[in-house]
Length: 70
Image 1 (tube, helix red, strand yellow):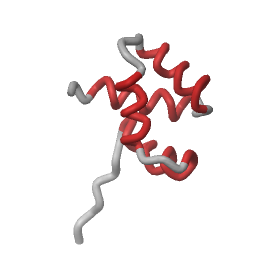
Image 2 (spheres, one colour; image 1 turned 60 degrees about the vertical axis):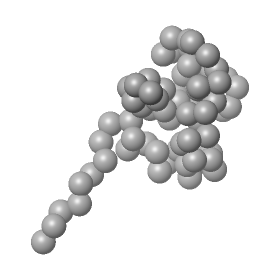
Image 3 (cartoon, helix red, strand yellow; image 1 turned 180 degrees about the vertical axis):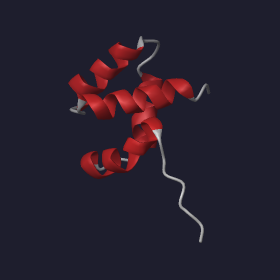
């Protein structure tokens, strides 16, 4: 019997983010790409202020986006 691998870290928030805000995470990553060079917490504040995301969701998106190194 195979056990399912549980998603951990920032990506574990993605299903909830997509359900809550009705947009795929790629949408939020594109906004972060377009926002330019900002510090982590400035990016979080941008998503919260301009797009109405909650702190945990915004922080998860920013952490994942910054950590993927592309």
